[in-house]
Length: 209
Image 1 (cartoon, rainbow, N blue to C red):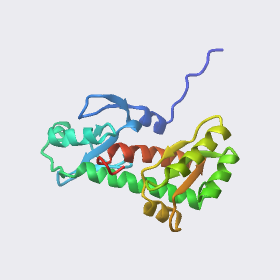
Image 2 (cartoon, rainbow, N blue to C red):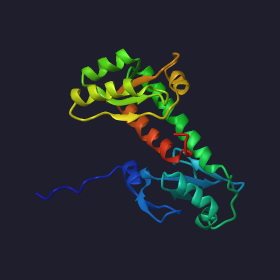
Image 3 (cartoon, rainbow, N blue to C red):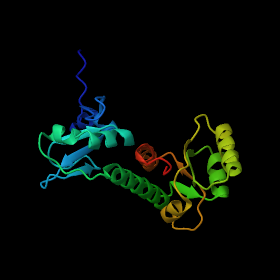
């Protein structure tokens, strides 16, 4: 009996579709690119969820690529129409990605997926459950080194590390003051946070991330 062809859901097929970056010419899956649209007033808008109507322009998630598209009039060529592009578009993208990552972290905390505090992070590591280690930018090198060392011994796969959010930002996400060390278990919210954090870092201004 012949095997049935593998069916792909519309959502999966849409995510896997390839698009070309208007700034670099690189071709990647849609899920690995940032989408921009032209609104009715001609303004270029970052389509954070990739669900706004209309023709999309795609850019690799790198600050330099966004800046190149702005400076090189790439959006007008992509949309085949005059556009209004804010000179700080890259900053707006970075701000929104940063806020979205912190929102995912906050949801993780509410869902019991994320924890904070040196002791609680150590316990999560000891249980072999740490998927992500999060350190405030102000974290002391010694504390980071201890937790990273324990994580390497406790699990077969080393947790991914995020260390560019300020303590104030992490404190808001956890609704408690002076958050310096945090961690997340393996969970879809953790995957979402890590993806958004990578994008935010890639799009941040020099010295901001």
